Image (cartoon, rainbow, N blue to C red; front, side):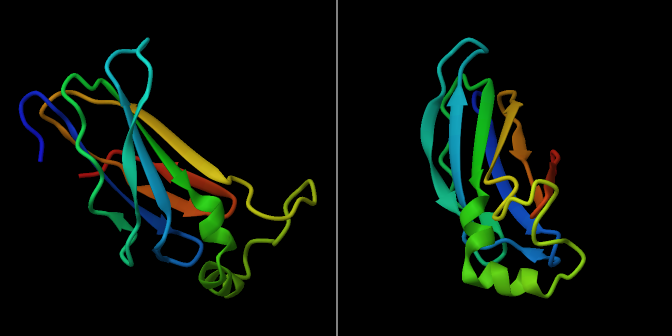
Length: 136
């Protein structure tokens, strides 16, 4: 819960290639107080069956920037994700360079925050791209 002196953050992930939440994705949270300050890793969480992280750490007072790091490679390489992705025939297994595996192994989102505001940052994910926005 945020106060007048801190911001708060939440996130969730939707796998748009299969139209379902992305469960089991590790998410790390870091913050800094000022553009030139060093990042402070605050901890992390893992998305639940609904693709949500309900227990991200609180932001320290004075936070001006937040970074969310999503470890999506393991999600796409997991057996359950592969079974779901196998049902999706629209996307090729290999892309352009002939490389195998995940095109974006990590997704890092950095954004500015204001004290007293809540920031919900959904990640819309598929094997070949992603999109984020400030939700509600």
